[in-house]
Image (cartoon, rainbow, N blue to C red; front, side):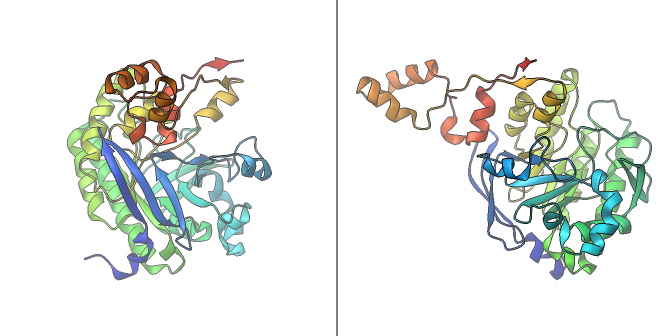
Length: 355
């Protein structure tokens, strides 16, 4: 039976407008401490470094149109400062000058992979500027209470990935550990008055072992989590087919009314592949990686939001055949009426590096 105290953080509501070829179009409503924020899906999170968008001041950030509604913070960059935040008592949002922003706290920075071999049955390690910080469930939840994010990724054993051959024994251990961490964190959340307004995001693990991936999805879905994080699906092109097959199978096991996030995936072509398999939210570190290499992303992009009206103005006819021919010649997508501007933006953009 779901604990009564955990019902309030799950007031968030995901409303699907339609599902087309696996792509989920909709809105996440009732977000934020006051419940008056919304977020479109599919969409992405604002990548930050210790709470700041790289290379942008807060003033500049506010001048940019279309900034993601939710910012991603990383526990690895904030764990060493949790004592200061605990004394501050008003949460990390106000501390970093983003009191109105929705905040999601992930375990690791996707740009800085962690060394393997530091996960036990009782703790997970994150790596900050000062080195390794070991996280037990109690310490982890104490830090989340100091941060007060809207969403936060639960502790998990994420060392079994789809990009490497994983033994069944290791995959099973990653799922068992992750479920144990989740149960402990849910219990501690129930006891914390501050964290009643935050949502735990359950993590789907299991490496490249289908049986364990499905078990992780089914068992995590039984818990009162606010959403799901698909972990370990990043990798090289040689494992793409395997990863996408696993992803399709996993999302089919998840409830439709809760958001699905994925970590480690940010390239436009990979994002589109994941959207077609039912993923809702993505990290946005890809532009940062390009910038750090001294490159710029340039795109050829031409989108007509109402292609029917444009066509009628051009030829004065509503013949279906001519409309189909015209849309094939245009640079809009064949399914743009079912897609958000975010999807269309990615579909039509072909990234290239310019020094």
